[in-house]
Amino acid sequence: MSPLTLPFITLLRRPVRSGLTVLGIAVAVAGIISIQGLVNGLEKAWIGGIENRGTSIIGVRKGAVELLGATFPAEIIEEFDSFNNLAAVAGELVRLVDIDPSLGFESQMTILYGWDPEQYLWQELEFSERANRILETDVEFVFLGPAKADQLGLSVGGDLVIQDRTFPVAGIFIPKGVMMSNAIIMPLSTLQETTGLEGKINFLNLRLRAGIDEVLARDLIVELSSKFKDLRFTETGRLADTVSFFEIWKALSWGASIIVLGMGIVITLNTLLMSVTERTWEIGVLSSIGWGDGRIFRLIMTEGMIITLVGGIAGILIGMVGLIALAGIPLMAGFLSPDFSVLEIFKIILFILVMGFISSYYPAYRAIRIQPAEALRHH
Amino acid sequence: MTATPLLTLDRVSKRYASPQQAVLSDVQLSVDAGELIAITGPSGSGKSTLLYIMCGLEDASSGDIVFDGITNPCRRDWVHLRARRIGLVFQAFNLLAQLTALENIELPMLGIINDSAERKEKAEHLLEQVGLSNRATHLPQEMSGGEQQRVAIARSLANSPDILLCDEPTGNLDSKSAAQVLDLLNERYNRQGMSLVIVTHNSEIASTCDRSLRIVDGKLS
Image 1 (cartoon, rainbow over the protein chains, first blue to last red):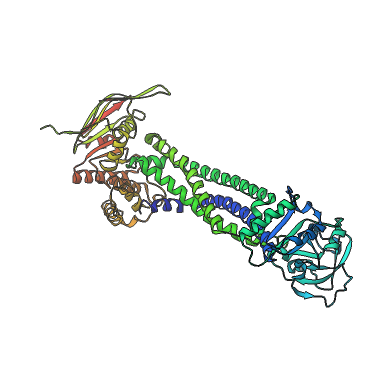
Image 2: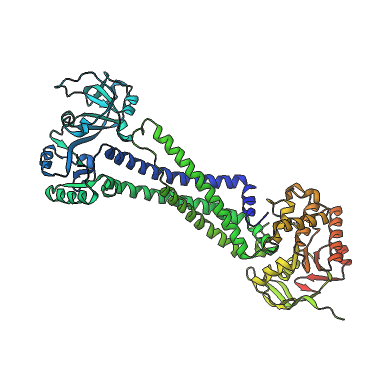
């Protein structure tokens, strides 16, 4: 036995108390991991999808928080011809719809993309399965992402009902990014008509010419912003920092994490305080055999830090496994890819250490304030 | 030749504010090095309080305490003295339930003896001296009262104290175990030459000591 092993011995020989405390902390930390992982996963899925299709700059309506609802005229695309640094421009209408459950499917929220067959987003689509022939005049059809096709149990040749209209499935496309796997694509004009948004889009995808560096890209954004006063242009990689939706989402997630962290502190504080109260007599015994305040303080602090760290690491693992499992359920498939960055894990470990320190300090302080003779009478 | 007192209490009193109560009144006591003293008295007479004051576990309300030249030791001094020079044996044994017999004996040595192998060796030796080598890995609840008290005595001797203060060391034991514990205390006392103060109800124990003092209503005579 050594001063370092004594706290371990004490904790291990009280398995129920130690186990329950570890569990409480683990649940709190798993909560933080899940919340942060969900936010990061959603961000990664969305931005990754846009980057993978070769879009360098995104244009949206200025001042809009809810981007899907903020539309603008599609004809604006013609005005981009004068910008030499742009290789291609594609308009996009994105809607969230419920797939009609009348066919026996459970109602499912689905991202519906309307792309123009004349523009690069559509033209660069690749397919794992496609109908042999689509008539030139045919506009009433959809392409499904593989996860969506699996969910709906549909393949090429099947029919999908969206808002009382039946669309034949003309292809299963290869998704560029996890979010696209759960998506449905149809011709822009069809989606505009189906949703009553004729002539409207809500996203502009701009692709830069090869060799355009960051400085030139920013100059172009300034130029575009001065010409199109109602629109806001952002480099794809910076979308998460500039789109209000993500800023609010991140702030909420951190807020929720702090609440969960607070719960963790209260759980640990309560347990250690109860432990100190129950062990008042034991602290008196330690005093009686010549243990000073510093040694007793360090013992309680070490016990607290050990239990918080073990609970925290267990929580990180539970959170990660939980998030991976969550991403695998059909409802979430295609909406997020679990993302655990080293930095985020480091931040959470720092959180855990702070939590352990705060929740151990007060009980340790209480322990050394107890009068030894008084403590010994608690037996 | 007069022996130098190891511990002196000069007009020591202890009063509690709530309820207003005088537990000890003007206690005069001197314990010489190597002396064996018994303190007897009825329940609630202040015996345990006196013992706690003698080792700094409780503060006196007034009066002076001198331990080997240190007058009125401060909290830190008392911690140092209890760690190295004062051993305590309690009626309720006061062993930590989560530690084995050997670990309980090692406990006072943490921070005093830095080498863990040396600590363990000394604890094993002490356990052997109290005749419990076969109980080294047993938890207190797995041992009889007499065995627990012998472990507690071994623990109190861990840092070779100058004085051993025993609060009713046989109070919770049957007669056979009590006799074994007393034999052990006497044997350690005779071998180590330390001072021994035993608080007890038992007049038989008191009669075997160098001096027997009686405390009644907080007054020592």
